[in-house]
Length: 298
Image 1 (tube, rainbow, N blue to C red):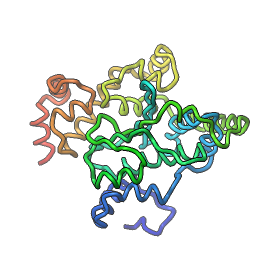
Image 2: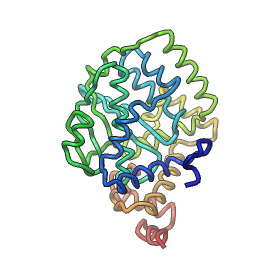
Image 3: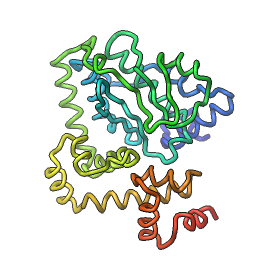
Image 4: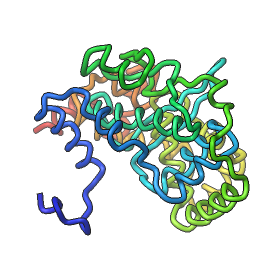
């Protein structure tokens, strides 16, 4: 409470998420996150906003935002996946238990829709919206906010965007300004960000979809796999060991802070079988996940 009214103070992303969830409950307003996004409209400011708006196409503007979003918030992670005839703007964040924090998920995805409209200069509707959690409000409420069907219990939290929309020209395309802003952000990024942190964010994003490999991370970072491997080695980092350490830390988080089943935690950590997770957990902690959870809860 000591932060309220003091604009010089900051609080964590986790606290922000808890405020959203608590506000939705206190107001009996299950659509709180979406309504907040609608009223805020675009949350992009400064260079990142100019970079998105001046890109040649909507898809390139979106990709630019995804690439440099870490400068604005290390806790928020988007990535783009190509599918036949469409692309997915997939949302993740650095917090565990994403199924239990629907407000920030819905708010962030609606911001994605509003960003596309801002880049295009016209209203925009995704093909579909995918949500991992179960509906918090009636189906027609979601359709009103997103303007398209919304599916629940899905593998991703994502906007499904048609290839045609991704290829549409930006309303404010400006090659010179776009180049200048990209140069500025790249310089700012390399000054403030270490490669290991970028890799860690990508690992967190790719583990739940069972696609976490050196090749996939390198692709996301626009590096050749050998280049990535060499640069990590220069910092004393082995990729497989790094993934294993992240899995270990996240396993302890999920066991202590969530009510997910062992099978669900296995999937979150990128294992296709719970038995594989249990073997890894035994190696990490010398006990089973069930025993560890019981210990952490007491």
